[in-house]
Image 1: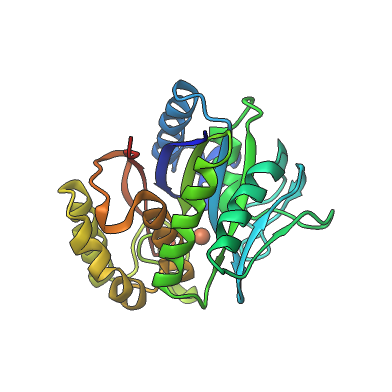
Image 2: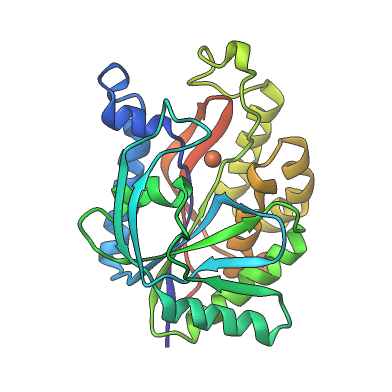
Length: 282
Ligand SMILES: [Fe+2]
């Protein structure tokens, strides 16, 4: 039997890469890298076989898609922010077997779900950036899952539930990461340079902080009730559907877990970010 052994809501902002690789920005996101290292330590301690990443930069418009390649290898540049993130080399085993198990669970539920293993299927940086730190030298399997920008919170709840079933029916010990922002309203271009370390708008900042308070207090039902409005009013990254899938996998309103904050809330180019570890149901 497989098992979900780690769950987290994580950041992937390109300023982490700037912090890591550019002399003039050295260290500006060290706290985010330190948070990745805590996730890495947990992944090692829990003997994770596969990192499944709900990737809000693999944005799809129809159906449910996952990357079922046996091997991921390449060199990445962000087309959105090429000045911030380039020359990111990657080389990870994939997990076609776990992909099959998740697809079976989805098909059994009548969902339109597809796996892709074409040679040209690449990877996006919401997977690659965290993996560069968390999976560095570990050689663990990586399975990216796309996030559908036009799907509903309810569909993502169901898809998350099916992902959890697919994991249980596989032989894998799995880390499941929702790689996406809290509020996600980019600082307007004319002010973008000044917005490098801030959240765009006090409304969004206060909403993010309130959501984190709900998480700290374990008020999961309240959080899930406000998620659809939160996603709309705070310009959720890919509609916050990564978060909905994560909580679907964790049991939705039956979830009774606790959090550990591995990177405190911070602003980046207008968006609200953090690394939060969520306890997994036994
Ligand atoms: Fe992003």
